[in-house]
Amino acid sequence: MTQQSGQLPTNHTGLPPTIVIGDFKVMYRPGLAFEQAKTRLAQQGFQLQETAHFLLARAPANQAVTIVHHFTPQEIDNNLVDFLMQELDGLMTSDQTFGQALRGVVHSVIPYDPVKAWNLFSMNTLQRLRKWLIDPPAQDDRQSTVLVAEREPIPHGRIIGVDNRRDAINLSTNLAKQVGMHDLEFVQIDVLTPGFVELGIFDTVTTIHMLEHLAEAQLPQAFEQLLQVTGHRLIIAVPYEQQATSAYGHEQVFTQEKLKQWGQWCIESIGGSSRYWCEDVAGGLLIIDRSLEA
Image 1 (tube, rainbow, N blue to C red):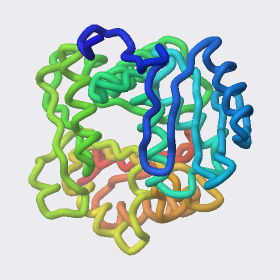
Image 2: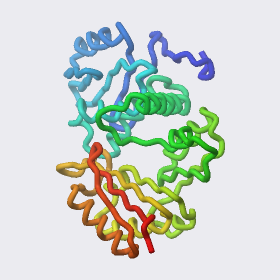
Image 3: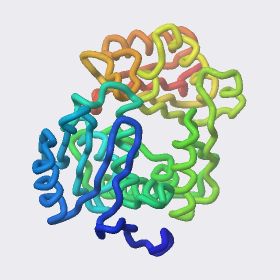
């Protein structure tokens, strides 16, 4: 079968091939194949641990780790992040191992076409976000540049998505093409580089779960750069954690008190009659409003 057919490529056993990535082997075994894999691995002497979504198998000789899952293609979305962290947290010891596990699960569903697999992941996530606009969950802070553009009631101005990772830019660009949003811009750039402020000034700037990836000493420069491109309102979302989650690449933790301190820092930097406030939304939100400046 060709990768353009939309069907799952298989190996000689009729099952999707195993994805080998970094420290993991990842196997997609839907339906009855999941139980068959569990039986076979047990017979081969693997140490097994089963969770709601995964079967974790460790080889008896070298402790190599195999992850077996049964997610349907419709379930391949950003919820995988939570499932991996909640159910396999002992394996998610760094952002590298977390990334390997996530990529392995996504790729295993369409193993010979990674781009198509990630397009599936992105579209499923967007569909879930669309549903949340109709029936919002109790708490969630995940955003989408494409979703913002879709919900503009009138022809919008310039909407741009920024990330310092090439893979994130590629995912966003492909998703925008899938839904026909051809006028969005996606730029790979770091908030700490001088070129960031050359992007221009925007009415609203959102920074979603980015600051926790920076060192404490880098925060003043990051806030200064963000304020320079903000014309009206800056919205910053961060998680509240007891300790920095290394699997996500977090460098520091935030609390509401810490957010308030940075909010005051921003107001003192801006001057005028600007204001700030904080909200608790699946972590913390810091909102800087420049509309009252003299």
